[in-house]
Image 1 (cartoon, rainbow over the protein chains, first blue to last red):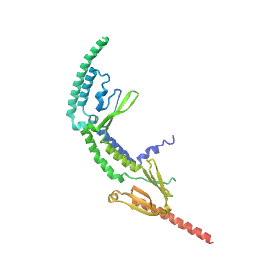
Image 2: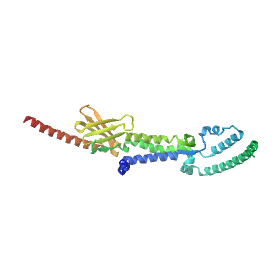
Image 3: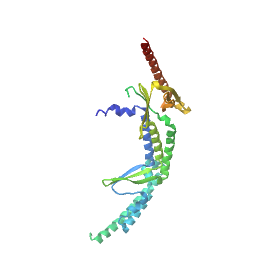
Image 4: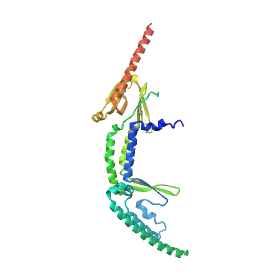
Length: 130
Length: 178
């Protein structure tokens, strides 16, 4: 516990070299954030953009393929992640485009949901669950 | 090392070209990353306890980050110190191999300070210390602030020790003669 001393904790802030280091690292981090660096945490399995459609087809059934295609279309029409995470850049560059794409995305999601509910009924009937 | 140690830090002003490049490239990187979304790499970072963590990494913005890290490496990889007995230069603090060079004040033969025009404006430069033993420059205090003052301080310490040595030599030779 003798090592944990307020003097040691305050040492980086006494030297001007350390102050500049902290400032520059913060600036570099700000540049990275504005450029779109981000972490996405989730329990689902979103994969890399290049092979997203392949990973969404585990059963190779027609319903899953169609759902995947619609999902891919809706996601591709969304803004790119770099712009989606850097709201400041979005606000400056394309505010109108964002609203339009949001509306399109909602419409397509409603469409997918309607189709899914119909197909799920068919599957349940085939399996004898209904 | 004794308690009376004066650490001479390497200053950020000595890495001015890298800093200017960083400030120039930062807005360009932000603009290019937003303009070319394909430059942002998406991928799974790792998976833990059923939770997946994905990373979106803008490749272009790594260039300014690399510049800052290179400059910070150059600043923190060396450490210059003036002890009560010697001058110490540690190189390779952040590397796999570290070299520590110590030169006693009494052994210092040549002292040169080196400043460019921009260095004189920013008061940044280098001090080169040579000894009689090797006949060449032993230590170079690169990128320090106020190099002329550091040079004068080392010179004062050297002169003080040489006076002390002359005094001691004079006393011991008298004692031998008697």
